[in-house]
Length: 129
Image (cartoon, rainbow, N blue to C red):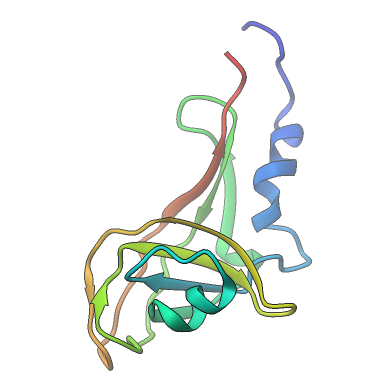
């Protein structure tokens, strides 16, 4: 392999933000429109959410190289609104921090009905090529 060639722990520093025991991410929302702030993610555009912590994420080898963080499947909550889950937003409740957003699956969430967030890779850091 060409350099640089780092041990997994180096890459885990980046993807490890999600599994840090400090609970850097405490909530995940499915949103109809791409949020850019904590308020948009947790109020304006959300149609459902789950409270999560670092144990809901796992670190593993990347699909092609490097490392990745994966959110485990979330089930059991009911939708708080109705709309397409076009985006999945990650926030931290303390300090109202907007951590980031990824594309959702676009499935319809119905207010008052159960919805699922399937396991999804939230960040992958690849080896340099």
